Image (tube, rainbow, N blue to C red; front, side, top):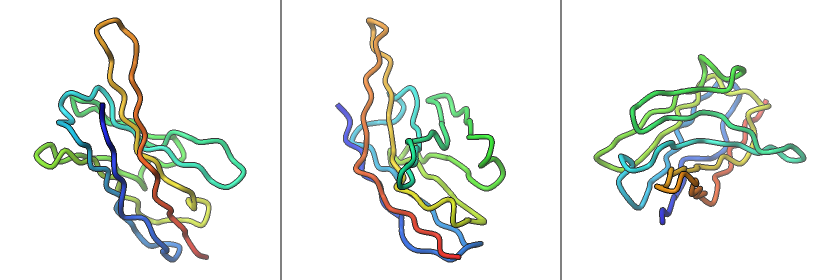
Amino acid sequence: QVQLVESGGGLVQAGGSLRLSCAASRSIFSINTMNWYRQAPGKQRELVATITSGGSTNYADSLKGRFTIFRDNAKNTVYLQMNSLKPEDTAVYYCNARILLTDHTIDSYWGQGTQVTVSS
């Protein structure tokens, strides 16, 4: 079991920055991938960024160069640094943890989400 608590959302003007945090209830070393998703009103949830237990990162193509995912292992926390924000980045941002089990199934856990609103 993993509990995830996001924070850091809010209202920001276009061009501004926000840093989201996702605090996990257990060591993130044991979590195969930590992910940030977002869901805008009327749209499907989409993957924003991924960081593996080995530190590899991946991003949605449209967000490369503006968003950065990184982690602090000592704090069991993963962050999403968002720069040059645009109104279309407005969404609820969710933290997700995926753990590969010994039977090759995957456990997936979600945080409650944090609202990011970018005004024009």
